Structure formats: structure tokens, C-alpha cells
Length: 100
Image (cartoon, rainbow, N blue to C red; front, side, top):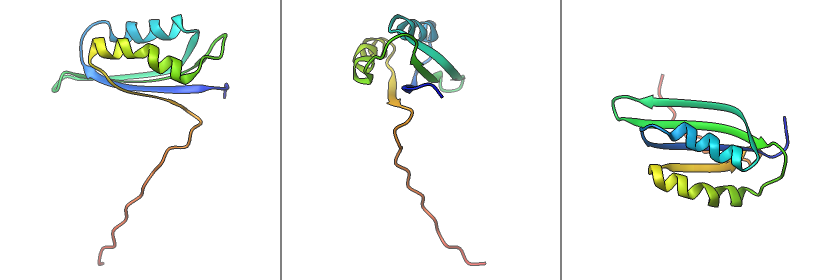
């Protein structure tokens, strides 16, 4: 697994140009897309995307990528999260006891 993998997840109203804007931003910032998945909910007209990427030639700070991506997120009305893939995520499991 290459060093410094990041994950971008986003959702926004569906419209043309979202995939292009995301991939162009990553390419212009020296990032290489390793995996991309997308889904368009036709009922709610909402677009969802998950992209795993890594630095192709240079190490770019995650905070710089987040700041740079803000303009694209605003243009498309995106809710988004960009994180280091190696960072541990907090998970809570809830269990109930049922009678047989």
C-alpha cells in the first residue's frame, strides 16, 4: 500500500461536472487516484462519491488539499470529508440483549 493514502467522500446535488472537477483538482495537486466509486440516487437527485488517492510526485499536506478543495465543494454545494486513510476511525458498537 503506497504511503500517504487519503480518502475523499462527498455528497451533493447531482449535476454535470462533479467527477471532472474532483479528478482535475487531484491531478493538478499531484495526486494519483487509486480507486473511485460513485452513486447517483435518482429519487433524491443526490450524487455520492468516494475517492482513494495518493501523492504521485510530491508530498502535499492534507490540510492544504482540504483548503484547496473548499472552492469546489462550495461551487457544487458538497458535504465532504477528506482524511488520511491510515488514521484510525472511532467506532461505537451498540448491542442489545434479546430474550430467546
